Length: 438
Image 1: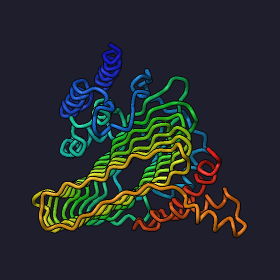
Image 2 (image 1 turned 90 degrees about the vertical axis):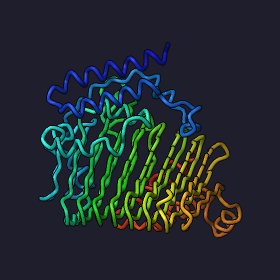
Image 3 (image 1 turned 180 degrees about the vertical axis):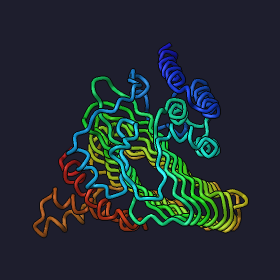
């Protein structure tokens, strides 16, 4: 009965979306209806679902979220501070809405509100929106497809080299009621283009809210993209996100995910290497404390020959926090000469922290080079003793060892433009939280 009431709340929100979207093309309405039908059929995931075995979403399901995406007025000081941290190609999303007046990018980059692009670029959008994140395989993606009102459409033209990263800041402000923000992005990189994208999720206050984000990325032939996602939301927030990538022949995708915020976070990255000579590199670092749950899921799908992929994720977990890593690599029968590797390492900084790690390989081809591995440990007593014998106190010694553990994944990544920023953010988090005795 309670489940039915929950479903009814989302169906009512869907009816409101349809009522407010008179100008939407018919194909988008069909996409939305298919997604909501799928959501109603399967409901929210439970711990009986293999992919959600270690992450309980009961707290999300039970809240009566406010679905009205209102965007507050931001002070000039707030906007200027965000711009200084982001660079010249700056896009601002506030409570799921594109803030065009506070955004600016260099000439040649096409940027539009997703709802507007669905009308003005209807033929293009019909071909690609929802194709990477198709209805039917995930309840949260289905909810996003059914309920998103705004978002970002970014198109990088063919042969265009974007020298400065495009930094998208997703800012959450909650007025009174717990709010849900359905964030939707479609990023298309044309043939032989080269660009870098940063997604930063932050909170303007510390109240409870739920970010449900879907980012679809399509890379044309020989396109190159570096992608960095930084999740630093409120300790009372919930964050569920899916990044869906499709790569065409000769394209390259390099990604780094830094996760430090939220009461519960789920980051699902799926990459389809749909043509020959594609390469994919996924890296990540999650830093947990208190009662946080930080869940990273990856799926790299090698569909054609001569593809390469490398995954390297690390976690540092303190207090009663829990980390989850479930990485899957699929090498299909046609994907001969695939070179795929996957590693997950974790450091538990307290006796009550937990990690559940599941690296997986499914290989249907016979001419491949594939490996996977996982490790879980604690700070080494001999290393701590050595540092303390040199006059370094226990907290500082622990910080130094944790910092070295985290630094490895950042330095190892071939992501070129964000390393110093990532190191600073990680050091700040370790000092403030992991080494505070939590």
